[in-house]
Length: 108
Image 1 (cartoon, rainbow, N blue to C red):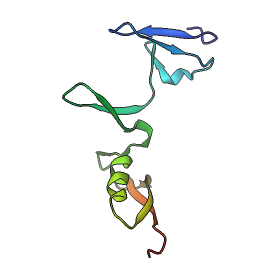
Image 2 (image 1 turned 120 degrees about the vertical axis):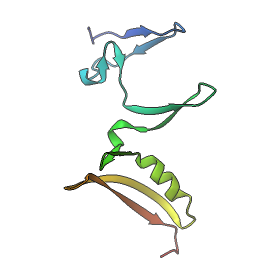
Image 3 (image 1 turned 30 degrees about the vertical axis):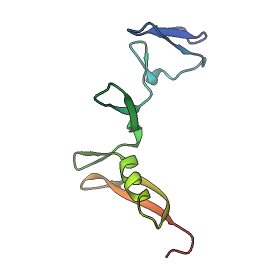
Image 4 (image 1 turned 60 degrees about the vertical axis):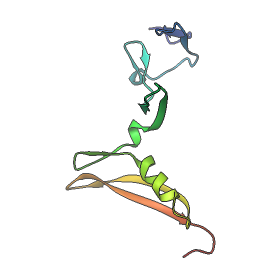
């Protein structure tokens, strides 16, 4: 594959995907497809929704945990201004979940 020029891949609807960056890392390409690492779900109307990124997924005790889902629950609390969830190394479970939060001003 020549990465010096844009290349295209056509899908069923015949709309081409054009890559304009001269150096796409080879690890993101497989069988001519660009692998972004996005995790998406499809609803009953065939709409796709990006829910997270594969690299962000936490695997704890064999369970796949998506930090974005935890963040969305944390953001529902009125005292939380910002939140981020990360995976930390754990000798027993492989990874464990840790959330960092910033409270609204005036909240303990």
